[in-house]
Image (cartoon, rainbow, N blue to C red; front, side):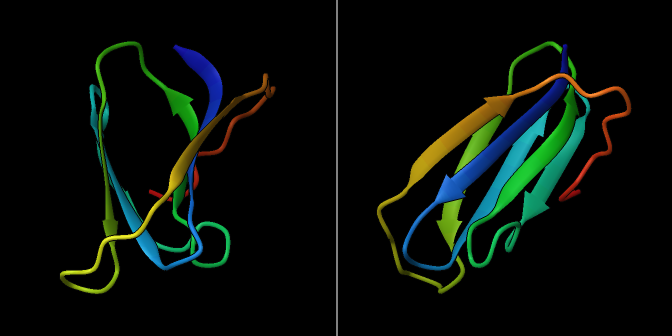
Length: 79
């Protein structure tokens, strides 16, 4: 597992994020401004990631940024 891992979506528009993995399912809308993200301790295993739009029927270009950094006491964020 990762002691700390952050997955953030970067887009110029309002996007949403759903992550499904061994520890459960997490959703986020506004982690940093209009960009969603999930950060904390991630269990080993397979994850499914969905990126969507806050507006129904709209689709926007985006990039996904993963950042890993060791923390002594990781706190889940965006759950």
